[in-house]
Length: 382
Ligand SMILES: *Cc1c(COP(=O)(O)O)cnc(C)c1O
Image 1 (tube, rainbow, N blue to C red):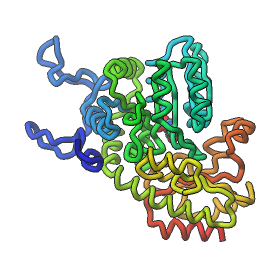
Image 2: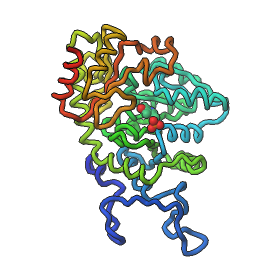
Image 3: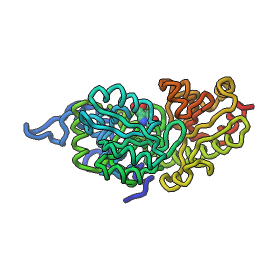
Image 4: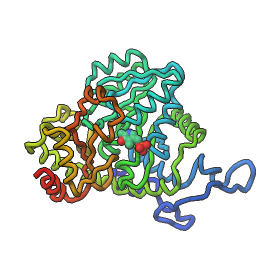
């Protein structure tokens, strides 16, 4: 198999020299495809909800990046999750999930799926014994994220996937924070990888998209059937944007990680911060696991300011290069205040239990020059 960077640039987009020889996959806007005979569409495609050439190019690319046999592209990360869950679960099933998952994932579990008789057990996935204990309830799915948002907790994907398969559960890993360049859950024993391609894979904060990658043929056929049945498909233009973004994923992730390391080290030495959560810092409790499981520690980190809300407000207001915004994974640096922004919908009690206080600030470190990022932080803290 070719190396990651070569696959990021080329997989799924080989020029078709029998036709025009396009080097870049064209944006196929056609909603329907003609046939010569009634029995069979001429090029294998019939209708763009079911399949579209631009989407197929993206799906080949995405499969290659995660080392999967199959990939499906969706209109958002949530569309990918919803389609997967509706394909796998039935009434009476249980899901064992991390207790600090992406908020939208918990929302679909609690508001949509509970209505259909699915139950949920949340567990601190850093604790392998606790996970094994929860798996004794024989769930259909073990749903993991690593690293998590915003506290950068990791879980041992290989050990959990092994324990889950013993009880007949499939392991799903939301790999959005790491990206396929840093971590490949399928190679660690997971069954399905979820991505919000809105984040690192798209990488430019200009498209919303999602993806599922898997290697099991039967599961793939079932999810593909449901994607067409439900209609959770991305537009050809969105597919083009994600394809285009994915070509530089390896370069961007290296720079994101290098910059985040510098920002994390700067903040960890600053008197206004009491803690910095970044798996690339030696004092991160899972520094060793991060080294084993991830190629680099990534572009996301969070830090706790000592002065609470008044200090946080002042700091956020004074930043110039870091924009105050939700979302993450784009080339530009963003800063987020979880308690009032991304995690505001959690009850204050749940936020407290998870350790998301008013002083916590989350950074999505971009690919700018690190010197300018540090100078921006210094200026805002001065
Ligand atoms: C953003 C995000 C999602 C949801 O993806 P959308 O593209 O916004 O629908 C799921 N998981 C994680 C970890 C995310 O960051």
